[in-house]
View 1 (cartoon, rainbow, N blue to C red):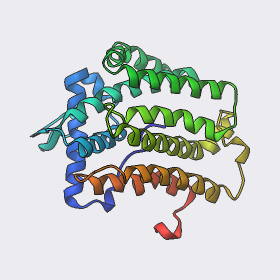
View 2 (cartoon, one colour):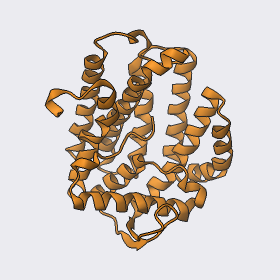
View 3 (tube, helix red, strand yellow):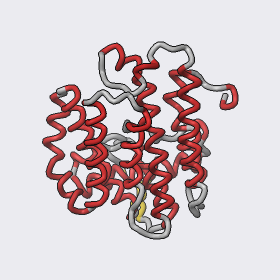
Length: 276
């Protein structure tokens, strides 16, 4: 469910690509500043989207620069950090911890158990800093675990649980935009969960794992069925996205929502003619 919110790089302008890299590098740098080198291990493009969205909405002051890093030691790379970056870095750690915990509970993965232990204190610090968001994440992950434990084959219920997580994650503060952000986040989370379940259907069926779409395994009509569901969810997300007064990075955000989000699904189920 994590790692879906990335851009379609081939459709970015050079300026957009540079801005996107600077945002990602800034988030990586901020994770180190706030959570140490360990924080960088949970870096995802999902939170880069959150930085761009909240940065475009609130236009906070940015500090920027260029630097080399262990991943790119040969050249200096641009970066920027804002209030939105700091918020996203904290949530990145929280999601990393919850993913490790979920992977340990589902698969008894020893690496996930190790990651959970290493991130535990940092996660507690994030919970103290952002109690509303962290409480919502806990509730939603517990609900997903319940649905999985009870083998509830209801895609809407599972998608709604993850939608609730994303709804609170998108809300930095309670203000005039919080309602719109929650509705957008709910639909976006539902899309992400649904797409992930569609992508994992074959593997989950083979290993006997929970998947709310299990009853559709092997049907020839799945590609169109799943695409129709996803289009409705994304349509709701874009409806509320378009209500936000976004200027800076709006085109980059649209790239992520309208092209990047479909990348993995299109690779598995084929690219429709209208988007070829």
